[in-house]
Image (tube, rainbow, N blue to C red; front, side):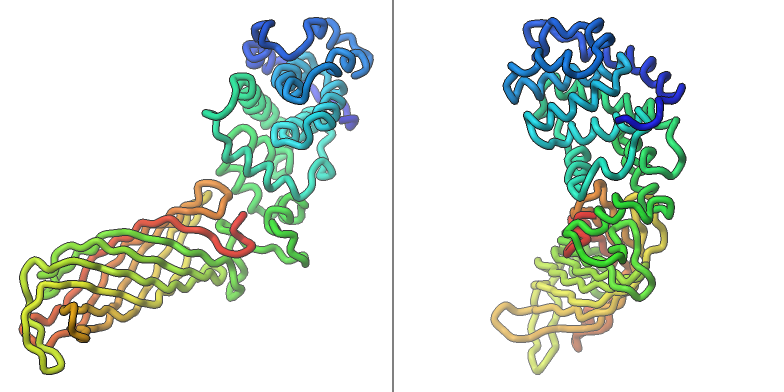
Length: 396
């Protein structure tokens, strides 16, 4: 971090952090991994990292990591970015690369006005995922205090960063403003950055073309990501088929995006009994049944109507086969056409392959039985599911 001199705004950051980090740094002496000789006076007056190194060399690997939780906030509070960058090198030599270390290096460089994309490689994708998926319940008190410090640090740095810049993006991420960071990353300002390329090419794909992700559609007509959604829901019939009563539906939806458009292949099963027996008059068979083992296989098409953050609203139309098997031991199917219109939501809470989906549909069913019970009419249905992105875009 030997870039431009810190600005007056950065000095205000240090002052604001002093109050925020003091509790984290004031640990019990018996639990501290730092030598008592590393006083504030020494940290302020040290000509270089050589004055600190003798007090850290006798620490084990685990104790070096524990020392980082306390020493990093103190170096920031005391305004010593030069010592911070050298300590980060010592920390990495002893403990190897880690998400907290990368996070500190990026925020430290932003603080010192020395940020550039040479600070990270394609491993930044895993580091960002680790921060987004962190589990506080499995962390030590020292690590929790350190994380709280970096959130405050990033929050204090944020107002001083150029709009639409990579420093602004990292300050948003590390201050837990995930949706704002995602919006910035999808914008034109960061389109030509290495960070964007690494995230769009998680497997190191060749070529300069950006692979679209969940929140960034491909160009119209260009194949985008595919996904599989496993669903469970409710089916509420009306009209002549209302005699079937409400049923639970279970199924899956395979989707392929084409820019803002998409096509889906849904398969659903509705098992159970009807509210009252119905007369089957089909293929020379006349008999009553109360079975309602039904299957729907369709083709749906639609487009995204609205997007914000990681939430997407879809509109779609579907057409498919809807069949009922009224008798377990006879090969008879009562089939008809299922036409439906629907609205759906897709929500990806983190930049991960997993997402949640909700679809609401109005269905129209044709006549499928020659007897007095036509089993036609319609239905209202809802399906809720959890899905996963498939292919190289899954890590978006």
